[in-house]
Length: 141
Image 1: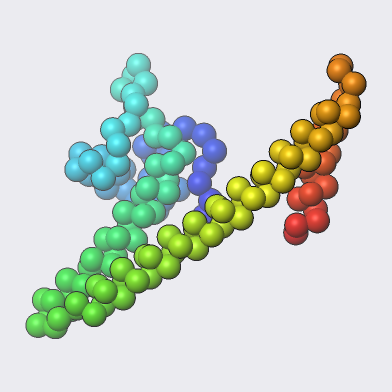
Image 2: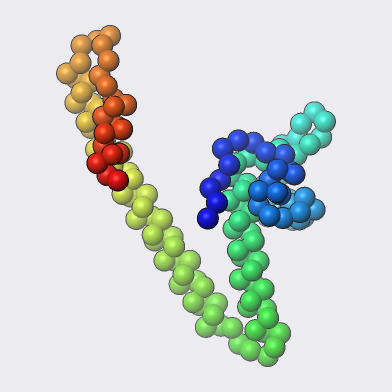
């Protein structure tokens, strides 16, 4: 899975990175699947880094819909398949929630440790907060 880019991109950059055409990107934008892009003075579209993930989600959803419609078009009843997809989406969301809760716990522990260090550190002196953070990351990997 590709990671989201870190900076604003023009249409051609986003399209290339996402593996779609610029026309497809414009189609997504016109149909409000993507939020309207900001424009440069020259009229070029500028997309935020989050747009890449959004395009990936759109492509995945279209693929799933295509499979469902293929079954329907051949006289099938994809209801169980649709239900299974819903269950898979719920599992993905629950996994993401679990990961976020874990990260929240880690950050709360780090902040508590930083507060302890700051109380012990004379004003104007370095407390080494970033070093503590890096050390805690080494232990968790």
